[in-house]
Length: 430
Length: 175
Image (tube, rainbow over all chains, first blue to last red; front, side, top):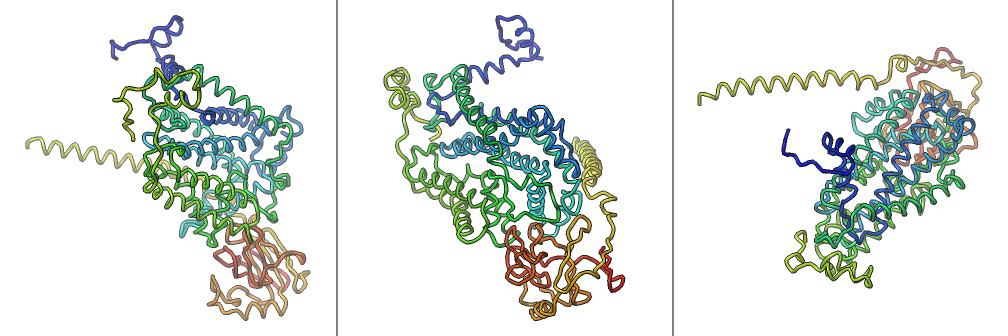
């Protein structure tokens, strides 16, 4: 052991005792106290914190639900009804958990929109983006597994349709599906293992979130102008400034989710899932959870089984390589006059795909889904690489404090001290 | 140069240790993977005998076999003719009607759409039967004909015919 290791000194002797043996106090001080945040960050930058809070809420409410849930085909539906009717505050736990899942996706979608619009996925944060897409994948898997557990009609048939996607794989598909289900169709073996996996995956997500946060702290957070921190004047400490800002965001979020939990707990639920699962009757319309609907629309837009499955998974996998498809060195779309509109179009298109994904795949809806599918992949394969090539970006500001002085707080005059020396004006990343 | 044989021996030991470790790990993982396959009692879920004497011409019943719906239909003369008229070569999953039935008035099918596993409509008189007057899957719009063959929509294959035998004129054993 290095005898010359410099140990942080605190006023509190207990902290010193811990710090000497495990330097965790200084770690937290560095990562969550003095951590410099660009001072132009807006409320879009609060959604990472909101997502973390929601993940913890989901894990806690889930653990308490599991105390009263029975993962057996004969008892699952009734045990959920018992939670709703007889277990003290069981209804609250369940509505927090079911609506919490929907809000988790709302928050994460906004978080992704933020990362895409302001170019947070670009150098040097590519790995951070990859970890994020991985978290998104894990979230989709976890929510699908969880949706099966109440064992209603939508649970059963949703699980049937999704596991049948694997049977589209040539040669090994049928065998793989049977292995995943533990039976020839969705049955008790399936429900049991789905429960086990639904319980463990959130902890895996928690671990990856740890890596995701650690990775962003290496190079610091991006900001709406997409330029790097150059002087101390460009940033504020995480504590107390950003912590307070995140707390305000959390209060607003708390109001929104409480309104749904208490006044419209079934707004985002499917009526058919209050009918017990029946393997002999398929509901007229199998509807996925709205937050998975854009991908479901892509699946149904293709008139070929294997092709639909490949494009649906491809729509997610393509996200992994976005940092390398985008050749522009300018991060923020605020300084990209052409790409900005294509980016907005991508968000609108994704929303439209989700809308038609909830409706029957016929007539105009099918047409919209097909056009949406073309734009989705066209955006990644054609628009993103080529716009970066032909577009002339607007002039980037000299520094964050410069932007801040001009646009955000012109009366405070924060820019005067913050004007960097000519040597520092050249952003090494650009 | 004198060191070379010694390094070779070390390389060999290292390689064989790693290989043995990898084989051992694979052997250890196998039981865990295999435990997820259908258990013995699931595989043993046997056969079902069905009394078909009460089924009228044109009528169809649904029974449960190994957790899946099985359709048993007594076809009308028109339906049999419609199924026989089709050239197998024109179909997505080419199969003659004669290869799908043992007695031509009795059609036995696993009632699971070959696209993504929904149960097609068409068993009840009031159901939609699709453009080919057989079955129609409401999930993603696959149309099956009076022989249960795929004619239109995303499903890649015809409805499966389960193994079955006629024990006598009034009883079918499925499985």
